Length: 325
Image (cartoon, rainbow, N blue to C red; front, side, top):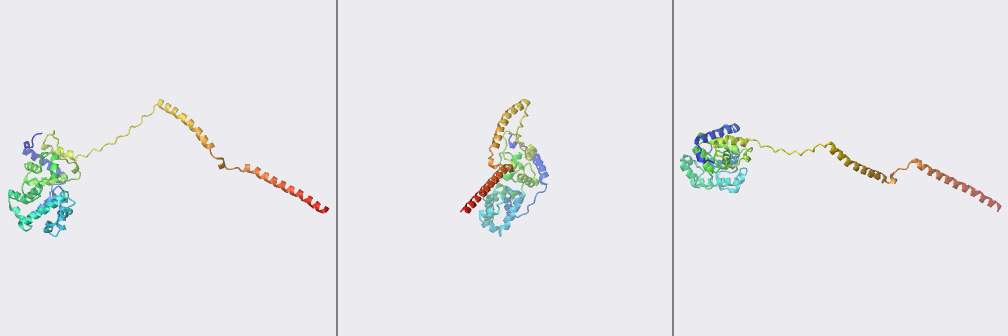
């Protein structure tokens, strides 16, 4: 891989122009304008880091409205600020940085007026900002860009990963180094718009999970391949085709005859079982017919007649015996 220092400024500019034009087709050409005092600009930068612009606006508005004033925010605990900004990524660090900024400004000015920073030179302002604890490079660069109009490419972890994935910054670069690398490829007037469009891509739900900050060491580092890298990133994922189960081969005449022979004995054996099942049914369940019941009724009538005849013969004998006496 050729060293990143060998990349020409003209190649950087061409790659950044290509990327800007492609992203404008998806996200539009207009970029938001931030008109806030110096201190409030820094608080907004805290909310914006590693998050979409729209989410940062909502979170900043909630932060200002949830407390009486900036002093109440200053004396609040980090846990309370974390709960207020819970919808943002890294809310715990954001709460710590917000309180650290407000404490530094209040202790150095005994107020919450930090407008003197806008009157300093870039170097003096940078030295002043570095005195604030827990301040990230993103907040520092964003403040210098918005307040002093400095020529800075503002990157955070999210946008830096996207830049590495697209191949427009060296894969082994840190955020500060990547910002300095792109500085010669983007004009000062276009710096904010470029950073804004890169953030839109990096936080887009359609591509956020597909962005990786890894680079194959065997590949050649070439910023002019940015168009190809973006096309690969946007390409739809291929759906895995389900493997169809193999269909059974049609049976030939020989196999059909063999199957018929094997099935024939089974059918013969099954027949006796059915006959046995029929014979096993109990006889009691069979209803008696009327024809068989008629002989029984006749025998009962004959027996009754015989008994009546016997009684009629016995009575006259007894009457004759009484008369002789």
